Image (tube, rainbow, N blue to C red; front, top):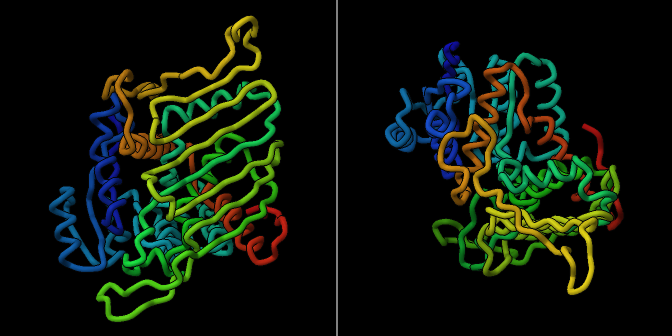
Length: 382
């Protein structure tokens, strides 16, 4: 049995999502047997010395720094993991690729389609490098099963779909301004939440052809962190869009930070000629599927939505926990990270790459155009 390779990781940014990614790297050898590689958390970079030192202690990094370049210059760092605000992604992704590092980046890819194209050009210039994105909704067993069924023709001709990503974290008008509410660093509900569900529908149903979208800001001003002044909110709180898919079907997608009572509300419903599927991430152990080919008859026959027990039915070499146990949000990130590390070890791209993230950025761009024009806008090629 061959010895798996060893990869050193440098993480830049160690807020909430940086901790999630560090946890996922630590979990790979426990959850997969054999693991695709041995992973070492070598360096962590944050904007302040005190947070860098704390991150080093929390996740057992070998060193901490406030200079991103320190990660790039280390020969024992092979993977750069980017967990910084959105407007920093482009420069850091390109610098990492040009330094010969594999890249794993949190969503969204960047803040504009023009920047996404720069990233794609750099990635294409370095085909020897692997790159991945944190689109963890692809790595829920139920959504993996939905894609499998769709690709096998279970739905037949797709008529229409509906997909949502609902949060309620911004409903309090007294919540202070944060970077996610600024145009330069953030991107609004469309980028923050919509990127996930836009990517998920593309993963299941294929590429987008055109969209028509509307954005809304509900609370126009918020207090600064020190409460000394009111600052304008520069990005969308809510977005809704209609989408036409290249392979057929029309859909409706919503992303909201103001969905009162919602927690992490990713849902979809897909209706086709031969079948239908439903999913709710707050009930993530199940995919609900309706097969129109089932026989009808007196009292309903055998027709109806069936509950498919996807739970933790991850494919081999999944080893922990039991595939019969309930699944949870952090597990999606662990499998996303496993998929990426396995791709690095095998010298290929994984399930989701920078190219996929750029395709989502193209949808975002078309939604922004449509919000201004009030018309359907074509989704550009990247």
